[in-house]
Image (tube, rainbow, N blue to C red; front, side, top):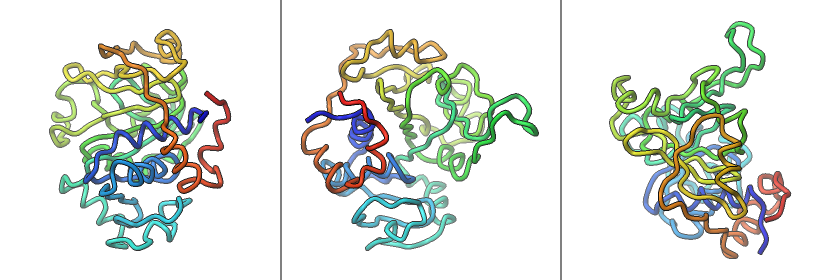
Amino acid sequence: MTYNPMELMICCAARALDDGKTVAVGTGAPCAAAMVAQRTHAPNLVIFFEAGGVAPQLPTMPISVGDSRTCHRAVMATSMADIMETCQRGMMDYCFLGGAQIDAYGNLNSTMMGTDYARPRVRFPGSGGANDLASLCWRILVVTNHDRRRFVETLDFLTTPGYLTGPGAREAAGLPPGTGPFRVITDLAVMGYDERMKRMEIVSLHPGSTLEQVREATGFELGVHAPLPTTSPPTDLELTILRTDVDPHRYIIGRSARAV
């Protein structure tokens, strides 16, 4: 089957989620990824929604974190406070986050563009629960398009902590040891983080992408994990589940039309 970049990103994100783990998701690609994971290799993945849905059996993809489907046959229909308490207890394995900018240490900006907070060039929604999730969950995943406007050397505003300024910085700030950024999945590649330096590095190139193309689309120096494989394309099963079960109306996968 042919596929588009959004479908590839969702399938890559799904593969990053292990069976029997917990994951906090929002709507869109993260939710689609969790649903694909549950329907393939991770049937015991436990999905949490920020608004309070815990372990729902999602019939179709919800359109917001407060959609009634996020509580369909759920273990609990609780509150945001309980979801954040779950994170504080160290019981959230994964979370999906996003932002307008990301730097080499996985820090995110979802607050503003510009240099004057009172008069920003662009104002974004802000943290929501992103800072809490990134501070307390074990592994942070980001799914985003890849371009130099997003992947920047210096954030205009630090909304959400990644590895902050590098090794030891999260712990020095009082965040739980062993937590932090895990994967950044884009339309060009999959990135991880160097264990020693805590900086972003390429761990696989998508089919058709080149190392030069990824570096050109990044505003900071990227490391390269060796050996550097090619990302496995979506399987026919993954695409069938994604298109017929998870997102049959193409609300998410229809945003990317370029076939690969």
